[in-house]
Image (cartoon, rainbow, N blue to C red):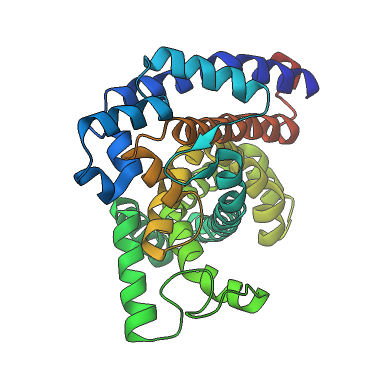
Length: 322
């Protein structure tokens, strides 16, 4: 396990280098002007000399390769730079928002895996039954629905029509204190929407995996020995059928991050979404590079986690050979 982790970490280095270089290259080609974004409305009445002097102070008048190299060498030393649009160090911007984004993604991902497993098993028990058709039909419908559409529908139904849950934010209006009860209440809608967006994939994978496992000879042999249906389903078919789901964990991380950005925007969740949008529109090189690196590292970590879980659960797979 340690060897696999070290090898993947070593392979991640060139990937992160290429990603950060690409971010600076794309940002340099962007039509957005970081100077005007930084100055705001004051840029409308400023003369060209003032704008040029501000461009020099921000360092955006230099080639993007030089800016990328300066940022990279500083980042390796622990300094992620200063965010021009947020007017604070990049490390502080990420530190203030990362906890809330991580909480949202973790709760949503856990709910999607648990509920998807239950629905997938229920559908796989009797293929072609009413339950199977209902679960698979709902999964295909949700799979085609954009996450922002689901979020807006959830706000309309639960916040505006039923008035049972808050429409967004982290605390109630006029309050700056975060409590456990208030946080839980405000987390239900965004986490639920994000979980629903990931639910179809886990449901369909579990249904297919468990359905295939129920048709295998070992499971048939367990039934022939007189074992109860619950023991056969949970003790044999489910364990075998969950193996493909483990590989799905890593592949769903990119979409989970993308979905989280949209959900945070709709629900005004104080995560990294707003920082990402502002960094992109303002061409904030240090902040944009740090957030992209963080997202890339999360994807690589998800793939590593999926491989580790697969190797630990499936005795046929040897981690040292992966």
